[in-house]
Image 1 (spheres, one colour):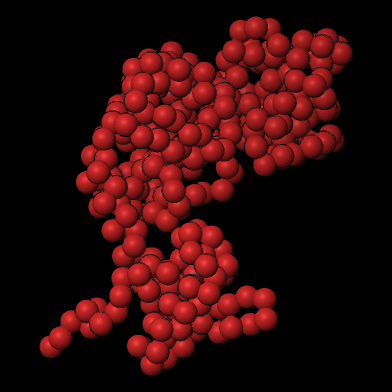
Image 2 (cartoon, one colour; image 1 turned 90 degrees about the horizontal axis):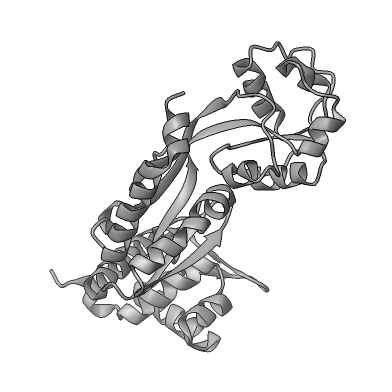
Length: 305
């Protein structure tokens, strides 16, 4: 039986995959560096060869037909595998290591240490991108991720770096303004910043019944770094990692009124596609960052709690 792929040009599959993934002929053309007309022509030629429509053309957008959805899943997976294989074949120590990271570990723990990695590996340039969403490393142009969670992501190899622990942080000004805190229950009446659920967990760790909470948190953000930044502006008490904000604590810009930390389960992980574990730039970064985590005394201290 003849190979059906022999009658389908790879260029048409590649263009179809981009158009299906981006849901736009225009954006596919921009990504591939061709004209929109070329994308439209290649897709139409592919549809003619398959004798069925792959897209429904609307006035301002295109959507996939059921046949297009089926082919899109296979094409995206095939292109991802092909990109990985080609990248691994041509990979050398030179190049750019692209890292997607949540802001907390990326900005407060990784960034101050990156200089050491770049000194040790001067031929690898590092590009950091902070994002709160879980980036798809199989489809998007990133080599690895520093992300929060339980450490289980399909197709990913993950290594725990930092435990998910938080303690109460505030500025010396706010602490003085509060008149002094004698026990954790005093925080039930204090101006607090952060997720109510996270505060409930901390009060549980402190042995405080928070069921009669008369002062719910006044502000909650989707990033720990933003909440602690609000605390640094003398706006109240926030929950933050004593590992990530160790420098601010050492400088006296932040203080921890109580030596009580709550463990929220999971942690912050290094993750990358399992099939790319042997790519040199990923392997050297993995070994370096695991050494950094092992050498951090605060990680060791709070991992034991």
